[in-house]
Image (cartoon, rainbow, N blue to C red; front, side, top):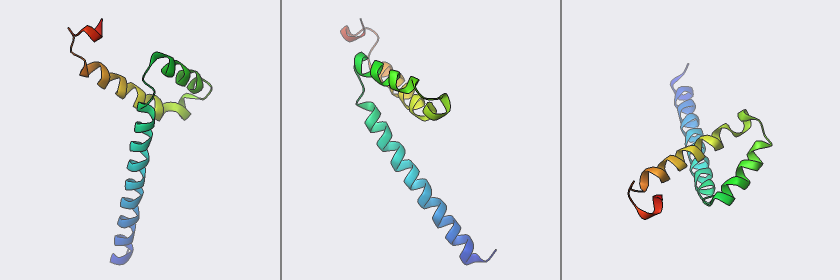
Length: 81
């Protein structure tokens, strides 16, 4: 494969990865807005209408966000009761 073609392939791959990361960050930010139990219940209801394959990425992000929220609260704080 000629060097020019290899360089172009790498550039295209890197641009694609940047686009994917940007879209993932945007989705994370949008999902972070669903914080209350009612909001999460509504979102879970919407997600339940789709297959696990279709919702895998969203559920993974939500689980990560839940974990980070739980980790951020000190165990003995008034908010954890």
